[in-house]
Image 1 (tube, rainbow, N blue to C red):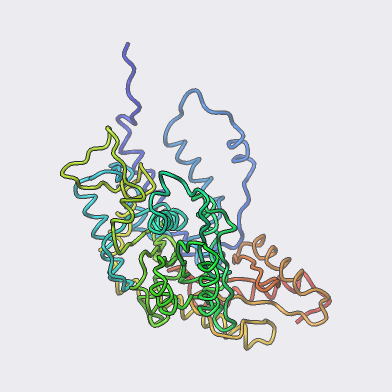
Image 2 (image 1 turned 135 degrees about the horizontal axis):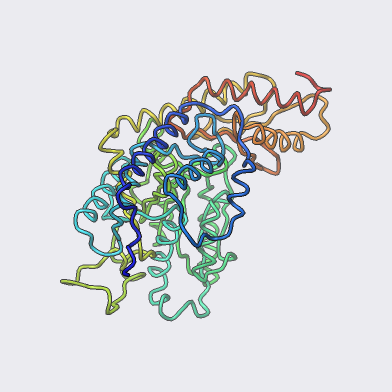
Length: 473
């Protein structure tokens, strides 16, 4: 007897209805903060210890199991999750993921209307940010977006390196000392080596890259026969939200003929807000990356790489394989990007922009900026916290709890961060700044309110007293 194909069969609509009910319950729960961060219960521990199933089970039972596991996972979408650079999991984006996954379009080659949607969304985002681009693509995240750009920069500076390798040519990349690790990782993967990455000193005010030091390093390298590959300007560092002086960096890159890439994975959406002057010079960059799954609220994974010229990417990635059609010499996306099988990531942002419009995105971004400022002022004025000597550049607000008589403030803040994460009613990540231990609340959620900031401080002080009862505040 011929086997039936793997399909849900007659109860397919029932399965979809049940999945919808799970999703509705999840969305409703995301509007509320958790009182605790749940642990994995014994039933799920047993489930997660099972061997691979030889025979399947009722899909409704499996969905119920998945729902239970999701509810016992770390929930970035909740309003008091202030760790890392969290995502909001925007509802319309989740629906887009369901649709895109159902159609399962491959964006490696021309994909009809889907390709047009991706191109249109890239243009919309470039307009939103104030960057005039010649095109771009969606990737899985800032790491891949950055690697794509830096490979093109390497081929631009060292033509033929993709074929002949780097030989004995010495080369260098330049970035802030607080650059994201993806830049170092890119240098390692590209064969340049992490030693080729020049970490440029930062200025004390705002913690952006020092352009004077940058030019000194470039000149010293050129005199030593080292080829500059690119400069990476960060538009919103993960640690403090610092923005490098893009215009001044662009002047230096133009002077020496060096590729300028702007890593805006976290902070670049703020270029559409009242913070726009901080991004002056953005339009002079050769390439720009931004993660829409960070501060544009859509679900992971949704990063965008925007470029000024397509030719360098074609030289870096183009190929002529018998199984890849090249009609009328039109290049496919796979000829200009690292990834082959690319899902239809653009749909979630396209739908989000269609449904909410740029004005709602700007308003949400401004609300997060206001929450960050409120957090900073509340910490500063309390007399119980140390803050950086300048207002938040973006939505990251490092604060450091000070306890009178505490023998080691660093240990206290590290233990306090751990206690906050264990408690789970609020959630914040630790950070090390200039060798000191800090708490690092970051506001990138559409559901967070000023009241949630108040709760964060109340909870932090409560947990601090539990850690140091002899130093009650």
